[in-house]
Image (cartoon, rainbow over all chains, first blue to last red; front, side, top):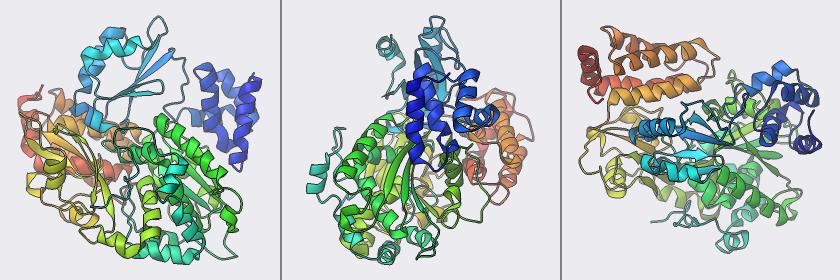
Length: 154
Length: 424
């Protein structure tokens, strides 16, 4: 069941678009903001509200890489692996992340604190290599300073 | 040297000017001016200013608007969309405009929307631009309070709503028709053209999609006139351009310079040249989907026509620099991995061909390259040429590959011959 709050936030989006299905991406993100990810059950409940079948909605959900159809950790780390960051050494950064956290790209730490995902160019190439943790962008990330950076996210 | 696009952006990374300060600096003047003129006059000014789209394709802005049905029989609602889905690898120019001067974008959008008599405008923003989302939301709210947006703007009788749509990832959303599908709440597959969006776009209604930098130029064209705008440029295309450089240069960054500034001036003058100990081998002049240029092209002027003459594209104008300590094959592998991953899977040459090219390049990097691989890669560049695919993603992906095969042929051969990457 969608909570009252989720439902209100989704319905508030209706006025900005001419039909309900146009809200699907916003709605998936609203659910994700509240629950961390989008479960099969959430998808069915949301489908009813948007007058879409669960399959139609899943077709949308699975297209967009920032809609999570699996549970993620409390913090999501997005490491840029596109060209400018690659030139500036993002492979070392990814390796360091993997050893420090004990997970490979796509994995979640056993304490549920971090999920690490690769991401396309973050549009901050003059500060490569870059990564994001939740909503925060970090540029000029030195592998040796990584521990310090991650400490801020409990 | 005038820098209309960035003059109000605090250089130290501070937040944008609040609305009152923006107005004091001449902000929203162009809205008053535009609303007192006819829509056709505005389109005419923009055509005369020779403003070409800054998203990569470089289409004439005024001409694009002229395709929109006008008059009392025109279908409504009409839409104006700001493409703020900056996701071309190596491109970071719109971020500056969005974070540094959101009112400039809104002002430009009102001008464009009025010229095509749009009723509704959306800013299509990529999800990762969280700071831009915050600043845009605030600027939109401020603009509504002062009646620059909403019903009967400044008593003119013209009405416009602007909404911010924050996306959820995927490079394909930046493709014009993929963006339309994404806004409609669908998968961002491209659409068949014709009909083109100015005739039948968002929900089948006339729609203009413009890049952020393009829209940000509009207030200045309206305020200062097309002649002033063309005089900013060193070449035939009007205006200034946000140029950038990333990679192993001394001072990576962004600079607003006259359109047509040479690669040498950007690279050596503004980016400070290569870092100590590395040499220039090549560069992608305007993002991941542009052909490599090399040292022999340093005096090429960075505008649409000149870069094309040199065998590449201006693209987004933000160059990615390859140095001699970095493997060109590895770089192209990285690029093709990106394009292969971001293919929407809609048409076969793209999903199959890009994946194939990516696997060949990976094999070379891992010491498993074979004789005949280069011919297969050459074949892919033909197979995915413009006209063979549904949208520009795959042809764009072939640009760095085909030019790398030309300029770095010996490096590819060495990978195959020695069964290893010499840089690893």
